[in-house]
Length: 160
Image (cartoon, rainbow, N blue to C red; front, top):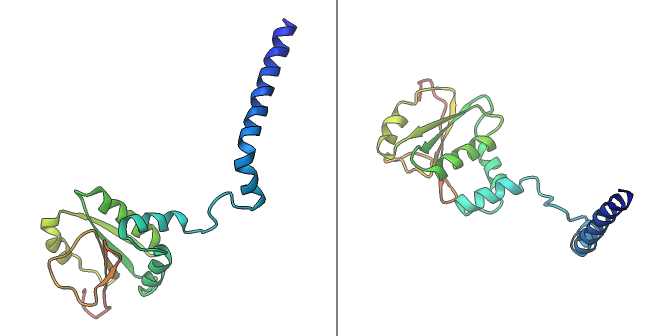
């Protein structure tokens, strides 16, 4: 019984030694250079934005865009309910819009103008259209990459 136990331990020690010997040439230089992972805090969101909008450093550019909306005002995000990439882009815009309150509005392409006309709130400071093109012409619309359209809402005495 003792012999089997020692053989078992020896086998696992040999496998662990082989693992270390094979992985050290790959992991060792990365640890020495301190390059284990990306050091950019926006690496994930930049990768998503690059894939969906073809924008490099999109998180920083988005930050500059969202700073034009006063913090006490919320943001409305229109997404196409029939497109998963539009909905994902809308969730990404919502994430990047923090600390603003966000409202994600899922619409069909055929009803977007009706849904847009139903928005009446003086607390909304900006509108985002994710992979959607509203039929109506919007003033001061800013294209953010290939898939996002941002429209600032001017604060007036009326609801819109």
